[in-house]
Length: 253
Length: 77
Image (cartoon, rainbow over all chains, first blue to last red; front, side, top):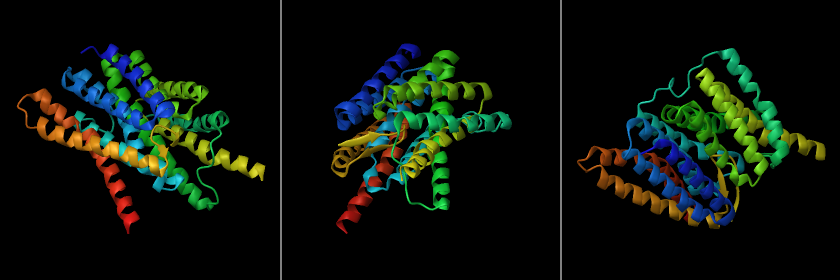
């Protein structure tokens, strides 16, 4: 099975599934994502080892949405949504790493070039501020003590930053680059990453996320580590959901 | 109705919509479990591989299912 046309088809189908989820009916979206997931797993059984690992990696994209749609998140307070949703995604990623025999270093969980990684981590601040001006979300939590906010920020960094980067840049991009080459692999994974943000109903945000994804992907490729980009991703969300909305709320009062 | 799909890991649904989505996910989980049972017993290697990779979906959906059951039990109590 040829990896490039199949991956392009996969990106298009995920975009359509996300559009269905966000604009038509989430139930149809769930069914659509389930069909993509099963098709990718069938493709793994029919392909060479390199392509097989790549298709397994790609299957994490529809699976992420299947998980987030099926979890009873309405029963949890908003600040817990990210943590609750990240646990099954993280377990699925660990299962995939086990199936493919990937160790921590090969998915970028080694700390190479710490100074560079720290520099990359700081980029999360401007990214978060910029994304706040695009989306202006409600604060994830209000009326919490400073200590509780600190814990929530840490949880956001771990659950959104680390887990999402492990999925997209650690596992998915690792196998995509092996199967498609650097340029195509990077483009494919970044497109999937941006597609999964369609639910915000903002074209500008999808474009913004695409360029951030491209930046994260390039850093992961060049440094061989996802530590810096995980921190940057987490800090982006801390500024997007906690810091900036709280500052705006303070000004409004 | 769905409120929003935030980042890549979270989707927010109201309680009534959550029931439909939860039911669909449970049906999908049953299909995956049944397929795994059939496929892992096959003698051909690619089919057995497919059976093994189904764990990717089974594991997280089991967590989802456990949470749905736990909240249902809490609701009844």
